[in-house]
Amino acid sequence: MRVVRMGPLSAEVELGDLTVIALSDGETAMPLTHLRAPDGAALTEAELARADVVGGKLRLPVRAFLVKGPAGCLMIDTGAADAWHPVLGRLGEAMLEAGVAVQDVTAVALTHTHVDHLSGLVDADGGLRFPNAARVFVATEELADFRADARMAPVLARLMPLEQGDGPMRGVVAINAPGHSPGHMAFLVDGRLLIWGDIVHHAAVQFARPEVTWVFDTYQPQARATREALMARAVEQGLVVAGAHLPDPGIGRISALAQGYAFHPLELG
Image 1 (cartoon, helix red, strand yellow):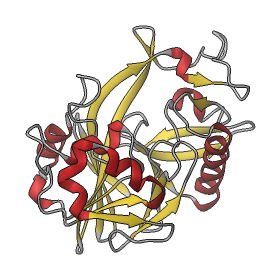
Image 2 (tube, rainbow, N blue to C red):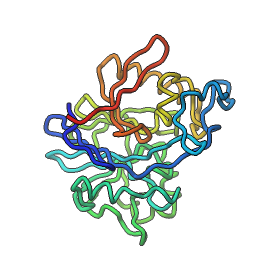
Image 3 (cartoon, one colour):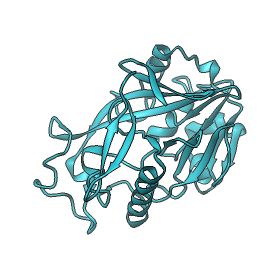
Image 4 (cartoon, rainbow, N blue to C red):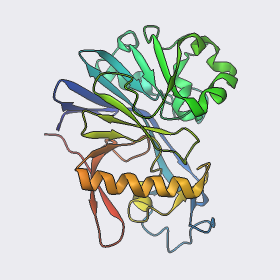
């Protein structure tokens, strides 16, 4: 596995006959209090000493991932579009940089249904952003939330339930990763690259201390257990991981430390 191309908003990785492209939707920042200790309290100043802070807030990149192969193009997550922070919504720019058209996308799979993951399914006029995406996969546990979002009305006819072990595209397998949301999913690509959505929100803190949670984790203890389990699995199986909120390029390896883990972003070449 190697990074074959990297730009300001995208990075391309080859895995046999599959290609994965990390696509930046932009970068925003969140309050320091969004990181939570196991007792639910905000982290202390000392605990935040290694945090990646900009303007007094936690740096938060937002990404989607495109898997290209002989069976088509699967978009995993779709960014925030114009539904969240105004500095986001750059997915279209990232796709243009990567040489991918919206018409190339043949299916979409969501890690979960939070605003910065599903909003890019519809365009500024309320129509289908990816007109040739015949199927949109959403975890069974989150179908009701998806259907309740009025913005998603154009997508409903293409909605498909997603369960553990399902393959939204050949070479891609869904893996239950609950806690951040009830049906949060990760996707294992070619048995080697784990696209894990929102398992980590702030890499500078949560790899070294995977017990630290995020204020928007629906079930904090379960989110913590899932994060610890997937980090251990990645180290044990030598998996590369990719995440919506990991630092550039959004893809890297994990190594175990005496306590916790370290994240090593992939580099070009």
